[in-house]
Structure formats: structure tokens, C-alpha cells
Image 1 (cartoon, rainbow, N blue to C red):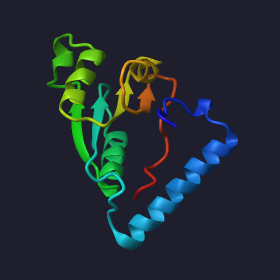
Image 2: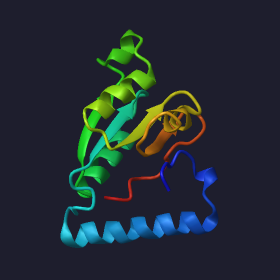
Image 3: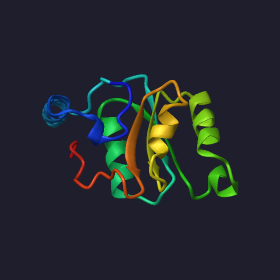
Image 4: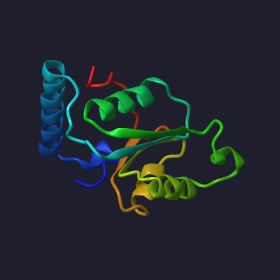
Amino acid sequence: MRHLVGLRELGAPELRRLLDRAKELRSQVKRDGPLDILRGKNIGLVFLEPSTRTRFSFEMAARKLGADVLSMSAEGSSTSKGETLWDTAKTLRAHGADAFVLRHKYVGSPHQLATRVDVPVVNAGDGINEHPRRRCWMR
């Protein structure tokens, strides 16, 4: 699977595999400490809607899997001056983002970004559509 922009797109077997893999990784991290599965990868966290728990959960998960994190929020970024999501993505991609985790207030934003970038996009919440309401699996 290249993008994860909505759970409705997953069938029961895919969802079960994803949850089983998450459980397996959580156990490994608890037993062995941080892993190197994503060593050398940069995860772009693009949080253009206020979020603390979700952002920290994704950041901790990325780090515990060995990734480096490029993190940005709307406050203090060029999006407050009118930069588009696409402009932001191009900038982060130019700085080495190998995947994006996107939180945006507009429904469908992660799907739109996924059609324009050459790296995986994970939806961290888009308005009232998809929203992670559970605690992070990597605790």
C-alpha cells in the first residue's frame, strides 16, 4: 500500500494485517527499544490544523521506528502567508521528506496531496472525515 488516506479504503483482511503489524512492532519496541526499520528515512509531519496528541503520537512512532522527522505546523510557517499545501509539500520534499503525515482542516486534503506527490501520504485527520481518536500504538 502506497498511501493511507482513509480507513474506508481498507478491507477487513488489510485492516487486520495492519493492526497485527502494529501490535508486533509495539511489542518489539517495548522489548528491544527503538528499531531501525525506517533508518535513513525522513518523515514530513505537516500539521496545518492544531493538534498535540496526534502530532506527538506520529512523531514518537516515527522516531521509535528509526526515522528522522521534518515537522511543521501552520503557526509561523509560510502557510500563514498564503502558501498552498502543494507548495509546502514541494519544499519538504526538496528537503528530503520520504513520506508525509498530513493533518488538515479540509476534508479530502490528504487524498489530494497523495495524487500530487511521489511519496506515501498518511492521513492524520482531515476535518470531520478521518481522525485518529485512539491513543498511539507505540506507547
